Length: 423
Image 1 (cartoon, rainbow, N blue to C red):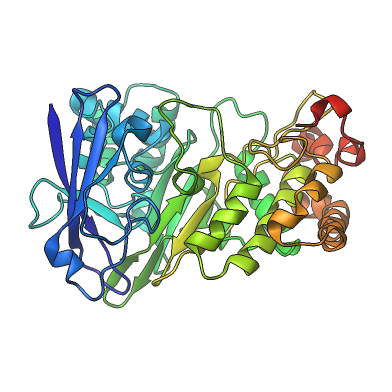
Image 2: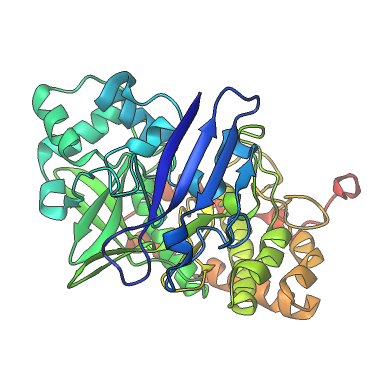
């Protein structure tokens, strides 16, 4: 069976989509084969930009892939992960089962600037983004938390959730939704039933701390609505103008790595040095972005942000060129193990979060060993001096601070790596 979708893109400064090409998925092949071709009208458009400058350059040719069940990375980025799929199954039943089915979700909150249609004339109708005043509706918030707990919704809760799609395409496993607030587009994240600590307030504090360490982070805030804490993070792939909402191209690190997520689900084959090298192909701000990326590795290692996988890094293009996105999903992960490991490989000692491992890959970031050491020292000094205060500023309780205290500047960071860890 061959399924077809027309791919639309929102070009810079345009609030209406342009048809870019046609995507076909052959599910009778093993593995599935995906094919994409740009439309002649799009190739003739002087404003046209590639969906992916590496895997899908702006050329008149047929592109094929068998990676990720036949999905090119930028198309896969527009498909929901765990939370979005769970919400879709609860709100729409069996209507959405396959990756291809999720292209038809009636939502405007996909990552990036793509939309999909069954004809080349226009994309599928989308449900409006949730306004902040509607997000404060008790029924809506209760529906989100019931969806998280896998509890049945009342008819009223389901009705209000269906009205806006309940944030069905936002990535990750945690409950969240997209909302328009103060003329900007925000991702609203909630605590989960069973969390070990108040992740909403802790993540806000980590974003504050990262900014103090010289790391670019999105605008963010914490709201307390009807007894619930919500973390609001401004979306870097959206902006609002007088003419309407602009959608910016975005690509996850998984797309940059051309990862085969069907073959390596929940295992990560990319590395920070490779991400740094790819910046030369994807961006015109590679030197600046490499320094920023190295600073983030140091921060993650010194605050136990170990869920830094391929979908928790991204590039964004708010104009013609991609650049490293602001840091996001910064949550410390307490561990009983003596050693900390990040999700992606750092250097000669794999993903081991120790100083020597970071220094071993300095050249990949076009840093001298001495300059890399200075960056690590700067981040470590700020983390040591401010982490408690930043948590307190966000009203993180003493009990929660105690639970995560071991995450900050762990002693193992300065320990020499074991020889057997050397790759």
